[in-house]
Length: 395
Image (tube, rainbow, N blue to C red; front, side, top):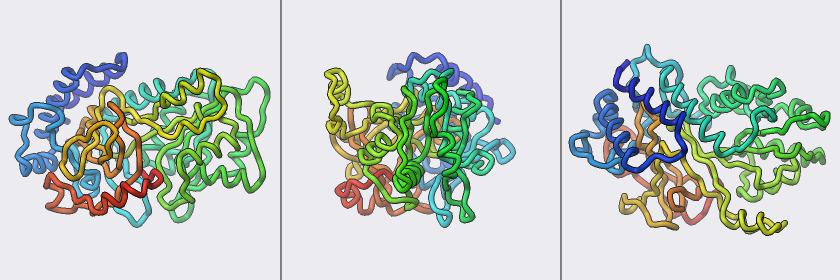
């Protein structure tokens, strides 16, 4: 294993662990350029892409110039600096069983950074007291989903919180799809003694729809303990009916008794090692301060990545970053993506909101394959159609 990449991983983990959640632009740029040079040297598939684009460490002067790789490339290429015998884990993208998944390889060193990154930013955004919280996780446990980065993340949360009552209540069906154990869900949600801790529910959007539809069918409503939280992530992938985010959150409030201000939205993917969380809009903060009870003013969710990652919203027509308030494709530079590729071009649309973004959903793309992966331009077929429809989130 490359010693320079390992040393970089040690330094980055130390920076994340002691970060006051601010990394100056100059420092981020220095780290990004250093990591690019290491990945160019040690990741042969990525190096070929860079060379075709004529963008090498001797030419690139700023992190925004570092060659990106589309997420589809992780399906076709082994974009890793790790030899086969150094790979301790591999995370696959979610989707239907017929689809070829992306593959993100990790070693023990990169998993340490990944887990430090995900915990520090989650803790910052969730604002829960660890000693007074138990988890209800709407996914199968890790032993049944060894290639899911989402389940791995939830397992790290479970270990950190450490509540004995915490549980995974998902199962894997015969066709590989995720389903819920409704009996286990009801047992966890039913009233318990007054000493019961706050509850943190974690799951995908489609898992919450399954749970909420079941509660509606059985005419069951719960009032979870004060300060309980819900974290929902991902989309529907044709696994349930699709709901606009505000409607989903309204149903969570109705059937679980968790106010919308305590619902956290997460954005992540298997090809990345850092996650973004939504930030309450100014309208919500103002409404809360004046004691308003009508929350319809909260219509957008602005996501922010941690300081060790940067996001750009890119125009597919020009390849340049759009202005604030404009729509484009979400591109992420993630320093925690140590042994793969730091610059990732997603297939998701977002509206630029300062240093963050408002998530719209997935654009319909013509997936690049073979030699086309080497080109700077990705084929953004039907971009305008996807932008106009404002689809529900589908990650």
